[in-house]
Amino acid sequence: MDKKRMIKVNDEIIRLKDVHSMGVIGDPGCEGLGTYNMKVYAGALEETGKDDFTLIVGDLVPAGTKHYYEVIREMTEVLAENDVYALRGNHDTGDYVQYFGRKNYALLAEHFAVVVLDNAVRAFEEEGLELLSRVLSMEEVRQVIIAFHIPVPNHYILNCVSEEEFGRLQKAYAPWKEKVKYLLCGHVHSRFIDQIDGIPLICTGGGGAMIEDVSKDIRSSDIDHHIIHFYEQDGKLSCQIANLSEDCYGRERKDEILKQKLEETVQGELMAHLRYLMFADRAKRRGMERIANLFQALAASEYYHARNFYSVLERPAAFMESVKAYVPFEEFEYERMYQMLAGYAKDHHYPLAEQAFLSAAVAEREHALLLKQASDMEQFAEGVIYVCPICGNLMTGDSVPERCPVCGGPKRQYDTFESKDIS
Image (cartoon, rainbow, N blue to C red; front, side, top):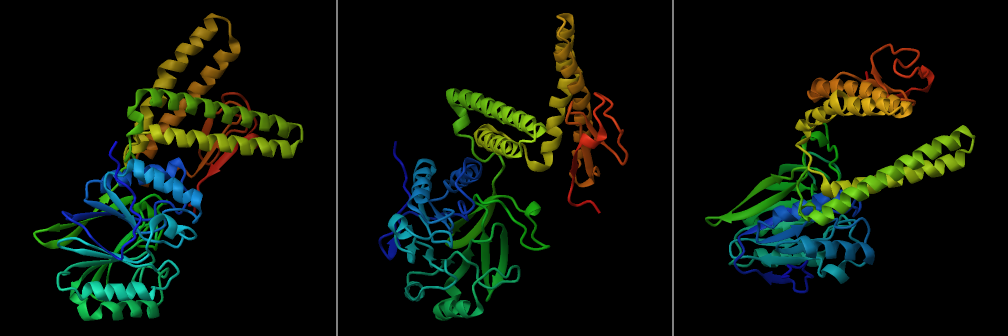
């Protein structure tokens, strides 16, 4: 198979032929290289594969060890559909140069140039600033993107380099400022566009890390994972944001054998999760708190395993449309499946199974009602929800019964789920 590779940069200036576009991914790996996060990165690579090459604007890894660099390099080489270049982020310490080469370099295409500068320690290196001036002074270079990891001072965040450092950058590009079309950075797990020194600043950190609140004006709920397309059209350099859907990568679930094995693995991990939780409950009742704690931790580990495997299979709808998609499953369970199974258990004189199916059907009906309410997420008002730990019955409202109406379990044992935004 002809693989594109993650480029180790050896030359200070690289000339690219037949290149008219660049895809940009920000901060794919600083929160870890687990399957759940890397699914976003895989989707980002698919999207930037539409461009002539890809640039990752820092934080490829959570820490700069050989292990993490090898994982991200191998994954990139399998998934990438074009050549991938990187710049160094503050997490990309240690062996970065061994794996990815120069920290300051320039990519020269026919109609635009990208100058990559290292400011991972909140300071620009002198050799990078000298390179920037040299590239800008070239007569053939007319449109330049200056790329670095940590933002320069802007109107949105304080997490940036100092004014003094920005002054050093400005001094380097000042004689040819009209050639600088974009300042490009990552570091912040969000996205914003600002105007700095008369130049658009694009900050993009949506290539894998969880999106964070930046300010009261830029909330995580308003920003999707994304990449940025830069492209030359009719000689002019432009850019476009491309949001990544939560179903942004699906190559592996198309293999039917792998899909079946993943489904079986998810079931096994969830069964282990349940077994460990139940044993933890038994240990608690016997006053063996350390054993209970161990098995709760084991249960959590098995859940996260299941989540990782399921994330490869999952095909989620857009978030704001997701809640109503769960309603038909709940309705089918309480209207048909559990009633039918309870009837079978009764006919064959299996009273425990009959009781379990009937009590679950009551809870599923309440699930469906609440999910219908929650389909309008902004208007959903239930702030406190109670679950009976004996039968799983779910209750809401200001006053709940002293005993569960399904099984008679006491109120003092109810699990309480209270949202943090209750006023």
